[in-house]
Image (cartoon, rainbow, N blue to C red; front, side, top):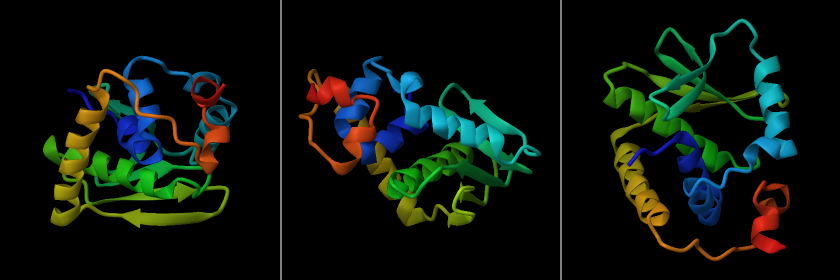
Length: 162
């Protein structure tokens, strides 16, 4: 099963969103917050090689000398999900034999940066997360909707609550 960076992120944000996304219900392109994030991504770090898609699985915002990954986010609202997404990118590249050392989550609007690494303990945890994602996406039915603070900004809000 192909596990994408989005799936890792959605696992932490909302498992119902993860399931819906995995079933081909992808409303993200129409969502205003997603569009704002893409605009921020394209307007920041213009001198870097950006949007590197590998195997249709991970989409790296930008990469420095094949050693340092960067993930651009507009806010810290779902930072734990972003951290695990970036750890997955590190894991994925290391499994492919690419000697990446670390990653950064860049917040251009906040002018902040968070360093992310992948040690053996986090790698083991990530492998458990991947197994849990496989369990969620192979269920016959979507997980129950849980109303969270972040739901009102979600592309799937209408599907879950209206």
